[in-house]
Image (cartoon, rainbow, N blue to C red; front, side, top):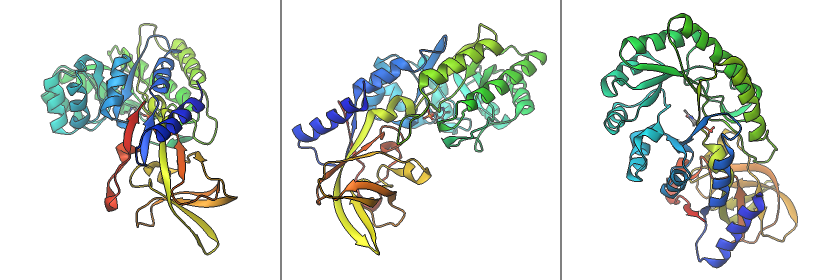
Length: 371
Ligand SMILES: *Cc1c(COP(=O)(O)O)cnc(C)c1O
């Protein structure tokens, strides 16, 4: 299955429905394909979809139907899943710092697996979710990932071991560890470095009398935006080989993909709402911008665009509809000169777009259409 079939769905939908732009079209066939692919090349991998990538209820219902588990960070995400009837046994939370409200609701719901990386968090888990399984967030290199996550969370080896011991003394069940190599990670060596570090913690814990059994390797699998990225199969075969070499065979492996499940299954269908030439620079204004869907462009994600326009090719600065000068999506993008009202399709928009969006300046968040 290629990106073409998703684009065709977007164009067909635009032509056959009277839907106004902007909208986010999600290709359910592509989501199914990715859900089948992810985890297939790692022995005994259990896959938990990171809900924050796209928490639209229809997306969650489809992913639930496909049999994946879920990773949540907040009471809001937890409530969405419980409303869909997802069993608490298929929900984990890897947010190292959780609110008391979330912990209380997670405890009441019977969620049994949590990340942590401070003593305070272990104490809170002990009071709200007594006896639960906990895994410590290890700090690992994030070089070469588009969206580094390494500074905000994670501890070094000795502290990680001490936290696991502390959790055990507090009556929690110290199960293992987690890490995140960074989102949109194009550097397969990050997983090597992270797994090697994880294996050192495993040994240090064993020496301290702790037998760990859970290795949660987080998310980070990349998708195609404008550049080719390493295939998920390649990353997974590499991970699988290394895990077999350096961990005991009875280990449980958890994966938490977000972007890779949903990102390339989605495209924005937008309209050109204006154009201008300002001091020699061509500006094209769209009905989706930084605030109502394309926030990740600010962090360096570059998208691919398809135009239906027929004018001469020019380089454009692409901007969103709001009056804020921060609302610029991309620069130097070669596209044909549009007429006002022409459509522009933006690829790779399934993850971290609508769920990131606000109605700033009165522009609505694009509707989600799952086909
Ligand atoms: C965001 C997040 C993920 C998903 O990351 P992707 O890069 O989208 O795969 C997984 N686990 C945790 C703890 C996260 O915060």
